[in-house]
Amino acid sequence: MENNPEHPRVRNNDLFKIGMGIRRDISEKHERVRERALTHVYQLVTAIGIIAGFGFTAIDSVQSITIFLFGEFLLFAGMAVGIWFAKAGFIDEIKYLTDWANKLDDIQKRRMNMEKKFAKNNITGLQNEMELVDNETGELFKNETKIADYKWLTAIFIFFVFGCIFLLVSFVKYCKL
Image (tube, rainbow, N blue to C red; front, top):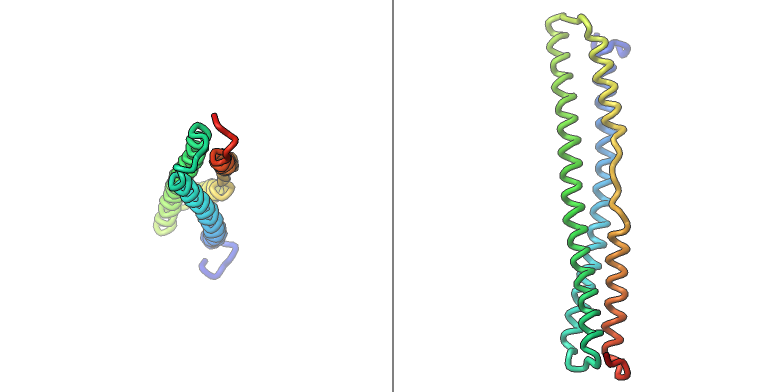
């Protein structure tokens, strides 16, 4: 049996190992991309914070306090959206990994149950059960990973740009509101 690659038990284990290897590679690549996206958001939020702080250091040179406060508000809104994006990304990742781990655990328990049936030579209906578990394993690997919405990043960037513009305009001598 162990030397026969056509035996259902050997085929089942090989398919599972191949599937797990593919899943591990995809997960590692997904994690690298996710980390780069979060690093980008952190850098953007940090830049916004620095600019907002510099604005307050020169508050005595502000010509229009209304425009200045609106610009600072937009910068703080950009920071808040960035922090919310990072939080939402972590929560989505936790939910995704937990859901996938639970599905994988259920399939693994069913595989172990099949191993016990093999050990007892109780193979009645085992072929159908193996095919069902193989199909469920295949469905697990079809699971789509949701990509973070780019609207978050666009919103952060828009708050950043317009906040900076309003902040700069507030220092112009002829803009008094």
